[in-house]
Image 1 (cartoon, rainbow, N blue to C red):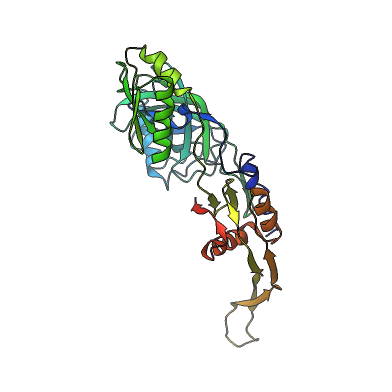
Image 2: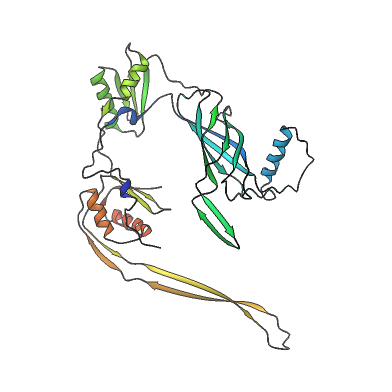
Length: 367
């Protein structure tokens, strides 16, 4: 594996925090969700057509063949019970969408299309009209249109190449809502603000900020909920003004987010590092197999057999002992860990070991 800089991607995503753990000023609307008006998730099953030979193998995916027959029958094309259909330009897919709160009939929403059969790529395909249902089974919209696929896959002669995921595509604005999803938002002036990340201090701070602007209008009843009342003011204007009120959140909890699959490490500004010593080495195991043929001797009545010769080599790299100094800022932590010179996957193990040794201050979250 090619060695990479530790935080070449990770710490660049830390939103430019410098030395302190206090977040920039934000608004109440960025910290809460109005009760009774959540986003809604829709799903549906459909077909993608027009694929360049990368669709489902219908002999192995019988529901794709059945879906094609059902579609044709609904369009008035009468076919006998066909069992040998082998189209390779059609794929069965699941279509998912997230509808924002207060979306009305006629609005467009984005959808994601994912293969559910053995299609190798959805690039170049067109989604046929697909009803989208909510969790209650009611149809709220319909999606259709040409797909955008960022992945790429190709194969020939037993050799294949793939970039990203070619079996998942998107359809920006590809779904149209046919029905308005009801919301239970109280238009009489009384409502609740639900914290995206429940916290005692943040809930009380939101209540204090609202009461400072509109005396006695808010009450923090739990770490995750703040009740508000318009007190005779126009409810829509009151809620708009409340959500736009500036607030300075409390100090961030030091957090290290690790994506074990890609080797990406992201830290926020609260992470610090204590003095520690790290010994880092590597072990490489290489297994090579060569196939040969053993021929019998002349007139021996023997048979030709295959012979597999396997050679195993193990190589252990020289360990490097590195002294990590105390790091009180995010830049110091990045510089200290970069000095280790390990690959991203090795750095994940090093950070976990530093956490167990009590040398790094931060909660590790694996995604």
